[in-house]
Image 1 (cartoon, rainbow, N blue to C red):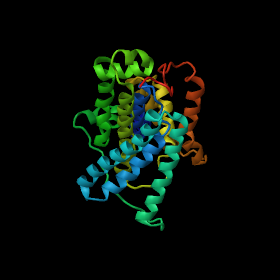
Image 2 (cartoon, rainbow, N blue to C red):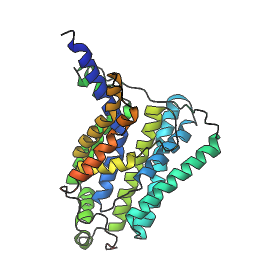
Image 3 (cartoon, rainbow, N blue to C red):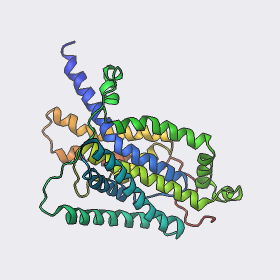
Image 4 (cartoon, rainbow, N blue to C red):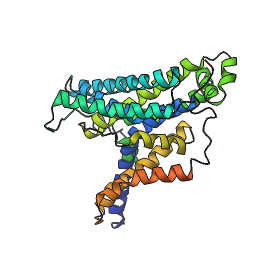
Length: 315
């Protein structure tokens, strides 16, 4: 029994790190789920996340303590929303190619945030420290064996995911807006014939996806890292798109897939704790290897919305 305690503690720490790593991925992927359900694929999600992270840095610097944290999340969400609006203007209203537009938005966001960061905070490389929302253990639940600390000793923003995913699942299946969204992504002509305005609905989905992507970026800054680094989104937008595929465009499946990717990302901490004498870059590559496996092995069998990526829809 005594010998099992270190292993149990290591497993608990690993699960805790997996949930923490999965949190920004889940926010971005849930937003992208709505976007793709509406027939649009926002490859600019990477740019949305980095814009949200930079917005959170600026917002958190406006006030100290908890007020700065709240402002950081608000500014991050708005920055993600604005970036998504740029994508929607071109991809939804001007019907430009969604992949090319998303790539351009990502490159633009990476460049703009890097330029603004240097303009506002200098090029000396001085570390910026923002207020962060530390873990908020939930009394009683945190004492559960193994999963207690992993699930219920997280920052408050993580707990919103526990409510958001089932709420989105319910909304997509039970509400008029959710059914209309799915109809636009599957049969836009039929949806239009039934009186659904496809472009405004797609725009709304892209904006909500941008808001959640901005929250994902803000989570990196004001709930985890406590600072901003150029390019800190580190491919999470592209991984989130793979998470949506693995979750089969279902919010609860997407949550589970995000946790899988989070576990892949947390493996580096476990391996380092085990003292493996391997370059840490190998551990950092874990999530990207999982992404390739998913895209190669699962994407071909998954059934995306029938109108996903179509440029020419009814008005």
